[in-house]
Length: 330
Image (cartoon, rainbow, N blue to C red; front, side, top):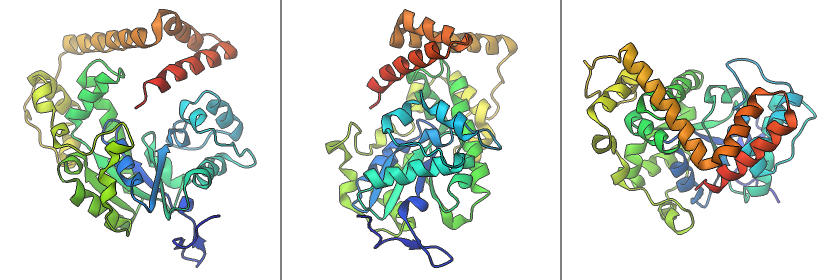
């Protein structure tokens, strides 16, 4: 039975259900969004469900795909297939996306008064899907984010890894400009791992909830450790001087706006030769990573399937890729 005790009131006096006013965690990949989600999910009044990338992954800056196109895209979407939520094709894209969230709450919300999830892709489009949402933005030093993306196999250089951070933060700027200050709250990854109780208390104050000590016990029930300050500013020991310069050159002004100081403000931009070398290293590292993870046969089949008009081959190959990717998710 749905718990309506904690429902908030809309301006028209109607009781607003938790999935109609979701708390959405946003930030760059590798910025601590999962850590923050798991910490909040351990609060007795919060269900912070999962990543909901399929809500915005297929959006550009304007417009929406048709509901038929959306349904087709989700056939091989790894996140959507893991959730196994029913597709509502009775309306448009927005209706279908909202139905996923309402159904996720019905199945997994446990009647908790606050329901949330994480989104990384095209976050600036979220207000069109959830105009009553509240947002938690977490930002991490781009030098650490860029370094971390290499380990994920997404890039081969920090210069290219910085693009993940820049894109997410630019989209956050677009989103933030569209919402009143009372609808969002911002934290840094560094504060979260150094001062977890104080940082979470601020988040909970924004959500109008008391602090719960069990939030810090995620190591007992997940593969993640409790917040640890050793993960803050690892770039100082892990990156070379030139790697630090390359990240700062790529995102310097934006990182300063987010409160991160440049160490090499007068660094020399990469020459054409260095850019070419970085591009080669990036491409080579990605190929090597994919060959190691998926094997030569599957990787070549995936490349071929992307270039040929054989839908069944493309779908079967992507599903096999998904299966392997799922096995590596923490």
